[in-house]
Amino acid sequence: MVNKEQYQQLKDIIKLYLPEDVTEDAIEADSHFINELNINSANLVDIVLDVEDAFDIVFENEDMDKMLTVKDALAIIELKLKP
Amino acid sequence: MKVNRRVVITGMGVCAPNGIGLPEYYNSLDQGVSGIRFQQELSDLNFGCHVAAKPYVSSDILNNYFTPLQLKGLNASGLVYGVIAGVDAWRDAGLEKAGKETPDWNNGVIFGTGILGVDKFREAIHVLDAGNVRRLGSTAVIQTMASGISAYLGGILGCGNQVTTNSSACTTGTEGVIMAYERIRAGRAERILTGSCSDSGPYVWGGFDAMRVLPRSYNDSPEKASRPMSASAAGFVPGSGAGALVLESLDSAKERGASIYAEVIGGAVNSGGQRSEGSMTAPNSEAVQRCIVQAVEAAAIIADDIDGINGHLTATAKDATEIRNWALALKRSGKDFPYINSFKDTIGHCLAAAGSLECVATVLQFKHHKFFGNTNCDDLHQEIAEVVDASRIPLETIPFQPKILAKASFGFGDVNACVIFKAMSD
Image (cartoon, rainbow over all chains, first blue to last red; front, side):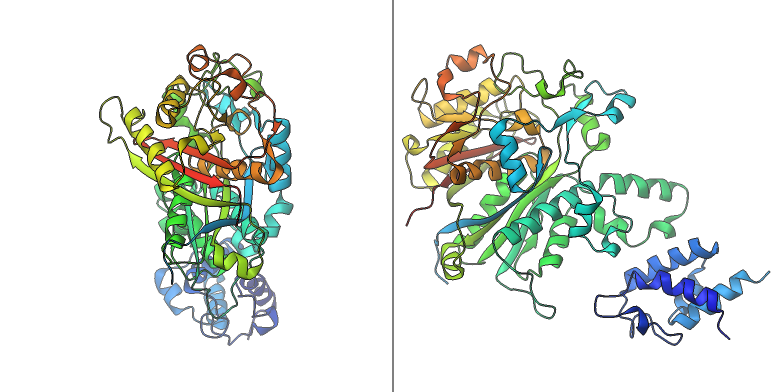
């Protein structure tokens, strides 16, 4: 189950980093950041920082290693936000 | 490819304290419009000098040159100026960006700087010192590496030839023109975007204030502060910005039907080795004279052919020494001395950007049939008046059709560069 609000918030962050030939519509829960959305690995670091700021959470190194798809990112966000 | 090919200038761009883009820059130089202004920031930080010359770049202009992603976290003023000047020069030359898949192997970038992204570096230091290295993000490196400027331009334009950044203090921009000229002349590239940029702000200029080489008595009259060749010269006004030129083989320019500003016919670089009266901060006069003589020889002209000079002339006590060096190198003085000007009266000393901004201005004189005036030199320095007749140092812009112009820049480290431009002829 995907949290719609968090999903939209994440999409809004990701879209800035998309290359010119990839549109926002291409972002799906299963999208692989590097292989499918063509986001370069340096910018993936920036996405993590933006997510941290937006959700007021902190990613650990292993979280960053596990964050390969949009869905992975949502799972990490949800886990971090659990009371 | 042929060697010893002719090299011409087909495009130029500027982001200057008194004008962004060639039309505004030309108008300011023609009319003596100053880009030197009072800087509250310098006053607040207890500088002795409260005036400086920097370009004012609106967000509208920024959006024309950078993508939203490039603008995110962008805090490197020299990089901003350099991209504006460089992209403008490319467009002015009528050149396109390379397609998505393949770079243009014949296009290169030699774009210098002294230090890049100082404000970004400061930002990074605060983050690091708070123990948050992981929060630096991906832009700290690319905005602070010296070659960030050539890397940005090379990527935006899709250049596949040499892409590099040269650095030789205040000679950087003039040196870059000579490096580009030599590479094209040798047949190793067809077109090179060359230029230089320098950051704005107290973290760049502070060291010079500490050395007491900036003027302190003109804080209430910024436009009068930079006084090259005058008796009242009181130090150089710190500046920033970027200038850019597209150098191209004559063959390529003709094939494209490009319009040509001028031809680069020779140049020389050297160093005084910080020997004799030369030091880290002062030039060895013998080296300066040799550099000028070698540039004249490389251009295959004689000294008498030069009808105009744009000096380094920063508005310090060294101006008289520079004039004497020109006179000795060219064996010309009095009324026989070429016209000479310094653009630092209106743009200040833009440090690493000085050479490129001043080369652009020098070359504009061919196009507009003018020799730009020296706005703050109504009290010519006595030692200069003893060498050069005052009529050779016009106070206002004069109508003039230059045939051959010489431009020199000198920098910390006792390094020199002199380039010779010629009006286009078949």
